[in-house]
Length: 342
Image (cartoon, rainbow, N blue to C red; front, side, top):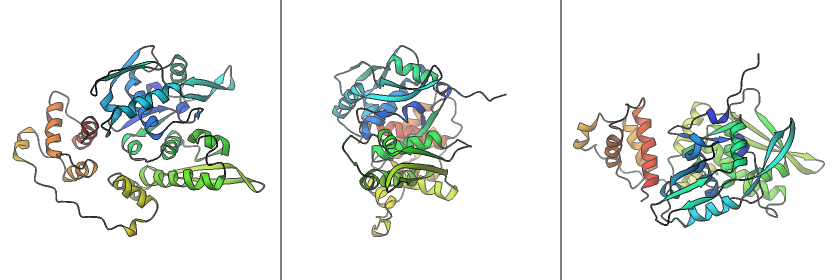
């Protein structure tokens, strides 16, 4: 008896990751989107997830989408691009392969207040695609926000969609298909050497540095011209996964330098020592692991980690105790930093 497939809408996001339907990973952008557009769209999907296949409106705080930027202008611009974006999704229609053209985002209502709300809708045709989806990518939030280009984020999503397939470790794409999925604008990076140098190689380096997988894209020639590529992926071993975790703690410039193999030219400044935990926190709960405080300090420079711990203790006081307090604190810290940018 064949094993029943899990429906995508049955998968659940958690404190560290979000869900993206596979059909929205390998899509062709008729209207190219920016890195920020893609991040915001992933957040809108996550926020709507509990009722994403229902004809309802969804509400989210603009500050959540703004992230570390103090201006709402970029959010509004991204929303308008997402509303005007038309994508082509490969679907099955009456048992045959077909292309469905859909809009990514429906109508929305944005508060004029900087700390206001955004109300938005998922278009009906897109809801149907999501409802019928049986393949998805689980995206780590930290990695999504650490990647520095839309090409790297797209490649990461492609690998996360495929990484857990036990029967498959590679996939071939025509060069045109890869360009479409990665969102390369028409007329840009038209030859293989430029595409590889400007988009593919930097994306591969970042995904290899920050994700749980190693990936490579190999050229396939027809005659003398590159016409196809083969995407290959494999899960990292323990040492490589640890290196990816450490890479997430570096600044964006530091990550790029290390991904490009130029770290030997950088002399890092020593980080200041972690100051003692204040006595007033002792009555709020037992201390977390020292490594947790160090991680929080490295990920969120400029924040008072003990003040945020106090906020977390107050927020979680009426809730069930966390199974892993250290992970729960780091997840809360990430959300707190996004909502209260320095």
